[in-house]
Length: 172
Figure 1 (tube, rainbow, N blue to C red):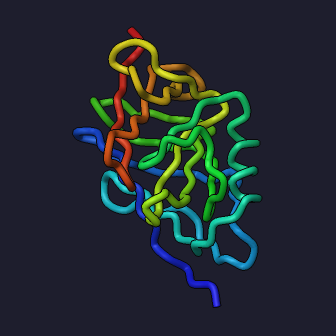
Figure 2: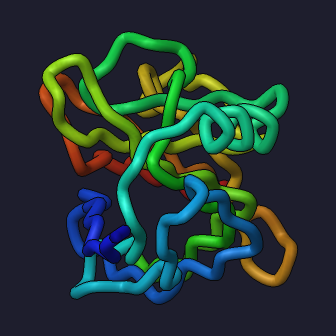
């Protein structure tokens, strides 16, 4: 019998307060339960779902990313071969006295070569960071009321398993 599990991913940024992650679509392996994405504390998301990696979920993730960029913890792969689940939606958080809205953000959980679960992040409008402070990051434009206010970078630091470091820069 498939079991629903708490699957936590942390977003590391000093002073962050995650307000919401509104799911617009998700994919999960056949027969696995899914109960949405929940905010836990100031800096964690919890995807309540079963865990069983399959190719169709990984293909859905790749299709959703389109020509955008993705990155992952604890892997050197460009894209996953199998994933337990994947979600796409809008992340809203507060930091540096601003409310940041990242649209069409993908989050997914798979497995790494060490046999543990690892996380993926990306999106159809994300790009690779090529200048400071975003070198090595997957970068998205952030919005308020459909107006761009800055850039948010998601960094999979060496040794990460279930967290991404965030970098933000306001448009001046």
